[in-house]
Image (cartoon, rainbow, N blue to C red; front, side, top):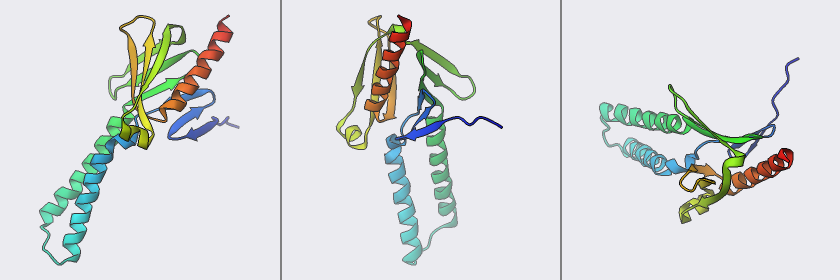
Length: 164
């Protein structure tokens, strides 16, 4: 009998056992999604008002919609951040992958940056500073950045008690 992974999805973040994995939020693509909605609305209006709709224009519109949806997902899926028991891991890339690991003993503090729109939509950027003054890891456009920081703090607290 296979063991199943214990997964819990919280606010688009995935908690697998005692790890938290996050990706960029889809909310940053709202302008593109609105453009698709307007394009579909114009096509529907032209269809039901009896105005002629060129077949080439319809095919190009459909191709544009599909291309935008695929491009946004590819962009979003090429990046993830994971908090595990000892470190924060940042994976970036599709064909050649860059993996950056930041151990908890190198972290000094963290900040959250959100604009007004990002606060309303509950996503933002998290900066994780290291003891070296110029080094920092910026985790961009994630859902629920406060929960991310809270989870990071709990993991760092349990790590520091184990390290003693």
